[in-house]
Amino acid sequence: MSIEEQVIENAKNGKLLTHKCTDCGYLHLSTAYFCRECGSKGFEDVLLDGVGKVATYTIITVPPAGFEKYTPYAFVVLKLDNSDLRISGFMGGIATPADLPVGTPAKITGFDERGIIIEKQ
Amino acid sequence: MEKVCVLGAGSTKYGKLADSIADITTHASVAAIESAGISPKDIDASYISNVFGVADKQVHIGPVLMSRLGIPDKPSLTIESACGSGSVSFREAYANVAAGFYDCLLVTGVEKVTHTGTEWTTTYFAYCSDFFYEGQAGASFPGLFASMARAYMTEFNTTEEDFARVAVKNHDNGVLNPKAHMQKKITIDDVMNSAVVASPLKLFDCCPFSDGASSVILCSEKFAKEHGGDYVECIGSGRGGSPAALQGRDHMTTIPSTKLAAASAYKMAGITAKDVDFAEVHDCFTIAEVVDTEDLGFFEKGKGVEAVREGRTSLNSDISINPSGGLKSKGHPIGATGVGQVVEVYDQLTGNAGERTVKDAKIGLTHNFGATGASCAVHVFQSV
Image 1 (cartoon, rainbow over the protein chains, first blue to last red):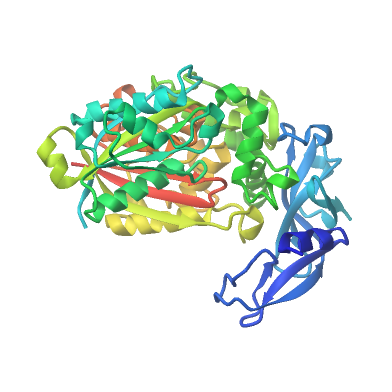
Image 2 (image 1 turned 120 degrees about the vertical axis):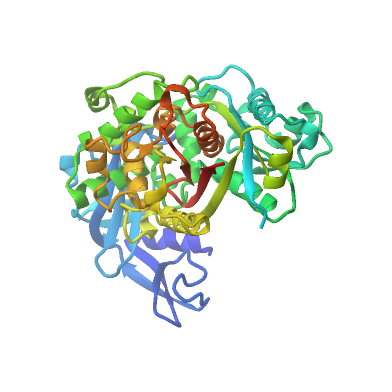
């Protein structure tokens, strides 16, 4: 299974697959092949719960092709509770900023044609 | 290293153009060649920046251009670095002249997309993001910059009106630029009442999709002196990179590649941000100009909106930001933009900027990036 396929399968279970550098401990998303901190290639897989808080977001009203039927929707950057990592994804059902204050608890709940799915907790 | 000079510059009008991509590429190139007072035969090679040639059924534009210029035997290279393609192309040409590899190069940027419509451009431009994490999840480019804008508003307690002022200022400048796509004044109310594209950004916070081409002649100082005519010297060239996706950045209110490119360009030029008289910066969205002016060192982080509010970035104030009108008003033909910024600097420093002239300007800067600043180039120019 490719790295991207592994990300997808884990996201469907609400998890985020990450790569921890075996030399310096720096934590990356699993699409990293070399450590950003020390340049090492040795990683161990670490499976994190995809839970965190909304770091920032936008509500898209002029969508790219394929997203018309979901519009308006939010594109969200989620700061994970259990690490310094952030992960972005699609959040449906958001129409105004009042629906999603920055800091709102949210979690990864799946993956489909809309990429990684994030929902409010 | 050889000193590197810009000997000539030319642009088509930016906007919705009827001519083909090959035609507009040629028109801008011919204008630059005539501005430099040289013959195409003097050109050693060309660097072409373009992203979506496929939209007008012409990729591999370089050889087509060289054939039309009567120099089909000369080499060309097409470079893609999203919206930063023009400055990256300029940088590669700069490096080759500085190294003594070539004496005289043609650098032309071009884009022709307006005939495709908003859905096509929104969809295809999103391919410039880190698609697995961003485009695939429905992020558009306005959406990614809107995410930066939301982060900025949260961190620095600013308002949407603060961003709107950037658009108003750049349209004030663009009115004075006959080549600008949106040559009209707007008000804060116009921005605030325009349709939301990606909250908190509205239509008038966004630059337009534009067609257009820009071209410059880059050469060694020796070549410039031999061929006479007006020229400006490029005294600093810097590049940098950022994590491709916003999620990979510790702070979403700064663009790391801008800081890296600026530090490198300032060091090479032997100047600091305070020495810059005017700058053409990458204002694809109003939030971007605010972040750019901070990352380039003109203002402290979080103080960019205050500078705009106080008029300190207006034409002939503390530092004229985007005297051309910027991407916002002049337009954003993405492959051409970075080269177009150099055209503006050349016109400013050689006394050809007309009503939008920055008075007594000696040092101009260009700042252009690809995507959300994943790639960036900064150049510093000095009048001779």
